Image 1 (cartoon, rainbow, N blue to C red):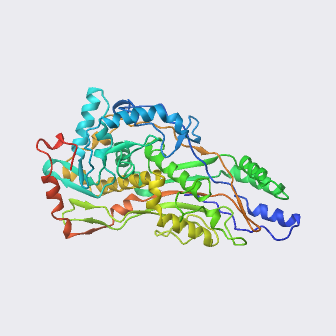
Image 2: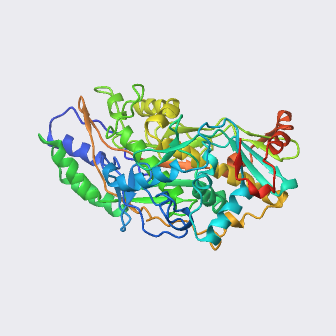
Length: 483
């Protein structure tokens, strides 16, 4: 991800105009507390009837906003008015209420990819929406195990599940847990993008343009003082820097998966720069952590990266367990990431390091307050599962043709408006003589790195047989999921 970091400077104690001018030049990029949001596309493909158009219809599930953002036809990210979603949310709730899923969730629900593809094929051939329980992958909240079953020509996904309900923003979540549920749409994108994500991972980044930086330099060079109303200077910075560029890689920019990345990045910055409360006492904004007279980054850069413990597998590589996954918040001012890549260069900033540590430590609690962070983890899990399947050729070992999910001619996914720009929104807080301003950053996932880091575990040897034995009677593809 690109990074342009200014040198950290404090407002000089001297009240002379030359001192202030020097500070303004040093604060060159003090401007990017990104406030993103938007409007969904009207391209439906097969996800119609409410779940996105076509087969993904059935109640508004497909092109609904993600994480409180929407994107207009020009690609500009805007915030979503919750009231504007009332009609869509009502349709989704009606569809979910009619689902086949049991009222009680399962601790170990199993989903059959062969069964899922059979249900998708039938819906496409009949010209009807894909059933909600299939769209929501049986109500799975996460994936803990992957089983390869050559005897049944199948791959099974297992994990905890819950009865779906729909929140105020149109997100299907577990009734007991409140966590967003996994989506077939995101799994299909992860499988289709597995090879693409191998080289550079999956990422989202928001950066100012070179032209905007040049204009901001000119604006700051002309300033002599913050004046009595710093907000006026902030607005001038916003106009000078102009819209910032959104870059998404590793997955199609017009996918729901991409929108989750952008929405999570957006919410992280809003919390970090004090535009949105985290809802957690131990996670205030970065701005409030800067001590009066202390040193601070004029434009802090922080981002989220996924981290997993080594995956576990049985001796035959037919059973896989995903464990120890979490999201880490890293900063350009902090140490290099685990892979040795430094995503920005900046002098040390204890306040920024402390904020990133708090974000990491309280991330799981944050998912309850801001579900988009749980949606991000869902997408990470699906990307890792897809990388495991591709890297180990599990579909070939299972003798399972996954084209029912990977071929657009068999399953056309919804096309969303691509996020292109984010309006710059400057924010600041005075701490003694120091003005602390806005932030930049991104999200980075490396699914192939996790997929290739696996260790044998003899304790998994019997798990596959037990899961297969619980399959309902009938042809393998006749059941989509079971407890």
